Figure 1 (cartoon, protein in one colour):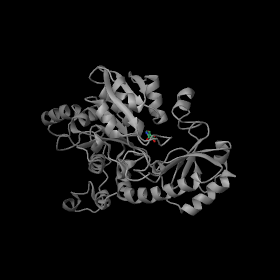
Figure 2: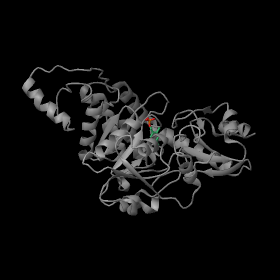
Figure 3: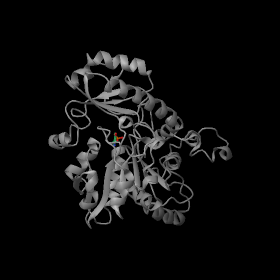
Figure 4: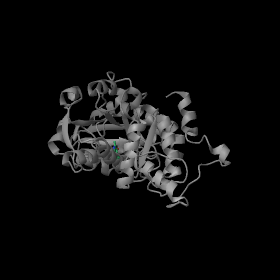
Length: 380
Ligand SMILES: *Cc1c(COP(=O)(O)O)cnc(C)c1O
């Protein structure tokens, strides 16, 4: 993490506040706005429908909201992208990405497992009219056809924390856009667009919000794809609530600080787990010497496998909360095969490393010693 990231995280999206004479970003809760000059508004309606952001009144809250736009501007700055488009959840952002990418008529999606369970489900079922080809990281170029609309990868992957080289995958993609789910790394540790990806997607519900009290999603991309995404957002209505956008932007200010501390603790716990005979395997990017250089630390998540029943370990924690989700200030632990990745085909689960023994730990801001004491007791 570079020092200037700490400055940008605090100040991104706040550039106009001094002139506006306020200290914190205003929250605009209007659903509708005065529209006096109908002829002029008609022209602006067309611009909104085309995914543009004309100056002046937003007309209607599903078309545009200034508080949401401010969060988008801040996130784009942290992801080094031209634009960002926010949604009601991570899955709303993923669904909109699929619809936007396939709007030209190509329907095929090439994807590398594991990905988030919800993403796996929407791709496997073809619910949104896409056809998925699952492949491994080395075979992306071979899997692409003239009908491929989008390539989707996650690194580090949820829940195995397996990393792949974004730069290598981007090269394999050629002209086909590459979407990287950057939820686990966060823009504090990794910027996929700088590595050659076209789209960086976040479940903002996780570390961006950071306190486990807001649901949202956001995609960072170039302005051309952002226009498609805004058109889809207007058509499907998966808008981020302005209050959620305010909370997410507030979360960004402490993102580097939280991620730095959580990563340090995660590394500490990963080392202790690795040395423990009750643990049969530890999956932590920071312990892998052959990893791609794109993520500036090992990250805030640790996955591990136990010799006894993993579900029993989860029953016995007391400080750590047994729960899905991740990236919160408090540590969360869960059993992917039963919960987040239960919807994934069992054979595919086993092949991509989501064994029944796997436990996923999202490390929070607690003291490493207190967390270790809890894990030590739970491991029995
Ligand atoms: C949680 C998550 C999602 C889905 O986000 P929601 O906000 O729950 O809709 C997508 N990708 C990853 C990696 C996630 O962890």
